[in-house]
Length: 330
Image 1 (cartoon, rainbow, N blue to C red):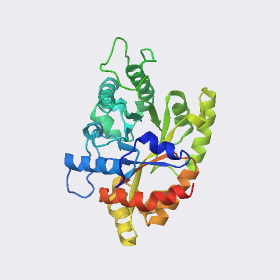
Image 2: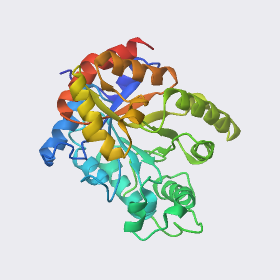
Image 3: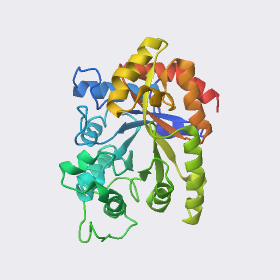
Image 4: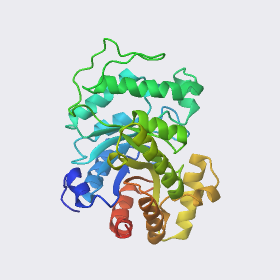
């Protein structure tokens, strides 16, 4: 494996080519359980192979056993080397903005300022039911929760008071290392309402790997550019990424079919035929590269992969075989 280099050095090598990040294996797809050693090995391998982000996303209750994302992310700070740590996404409405801010500030402090905060409402009504909140209020609450996070975590923002949350009189210490604070990227599948929200209160856009296509991403990005300009922000300086890019590279068509049929389809509750229409890198090397190259050509800057089995081997296989083809196409 290559010696670890800083994330900024990797990104500066060629800003026109997509970066790749890796989701921590929070779901036990293979029924083998978890250990801290497994998470550490994953984070260390990803950093050494050149992945620039280590990611964790968030559910309280789910159809599959799911490790707590922020706890797992904090547990691999040392092993993650120079990689940026990202929540993709964390649920500040479900967790509460004050508690979320406290946890995220701690991760930023202990990592030396390597945190990007991805936030979203979450797509599971079960998470809201578990904490006694109305799922239909998620959008109104999300906007206030993001403004609350910004007030709690940044040095350039005044306190916030809204219908659901208030940060009046609340000072969380220690403060994040990053000044004025960690960037907050807002998740959206690409709707016009979502893009307006991203432009209005976000520092970046997180799209969903299994809820978009290259064409839909291109359209969403074009609309976002208009909204950013209306907000006085530069579209050229506004970062984006696609999270939860389910991944399994294999030349064995039967194994590809097994992953789609037995792993991904039941988890997402979608038919295999619908999954095939997406641009997920599942299957042969060249097919995976072609799908991700289409995203890169649509303007995706970062792609956060989540291996569906054999995670360490998949990290190596992707970086060795697929990534060069994607970068070579842009």
